[in-house]
Image (cartoon, rainbow, N blue to C red; front, side, top):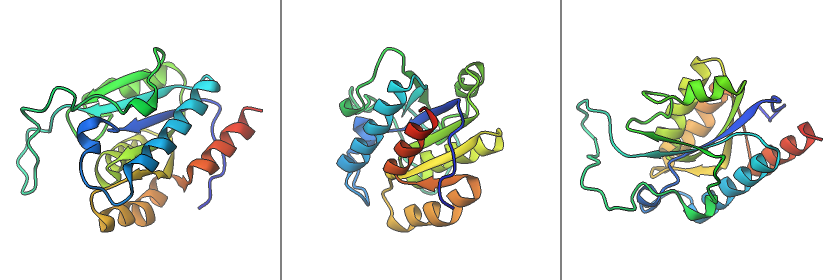
Length: 187
């Protein structure tokens, strides 16, 4: 489904574009993903719309066959990519689970600002982005996913999220399409 509209109160939510995560090998070059996310962040700021920058600093406590322990991390592991150009008005969420809504106050932050839609981007497509998209959808937000501003460590997982899961949770499009809609909706 092509992108149709952006609500007047739309927020950008950028998932885990941080030094530690960006050091993992990915399907798509992280430089392009970060550049697209930075373009979105700049445009949202210009239009005085909320920008939420999410990082991960831990993991959920449950057992899993393929869990990664996030302990004894380098000091700069959680630092956001410099290209995002974090601004004082940006809202930062530090999470310890896959999704940005679980055990954080992201929902409260968005609701108090009247946000009804989120645009999502970041890494990993099938983990942090998808988990956040699922929860946002369940909470009643309209969800847009900028698919060229995200990547994954696994090509099949990325493709599954983009082609099978995301169309059930919202609308997908490119950074350029989101920027065009943003410009059109704010004219």
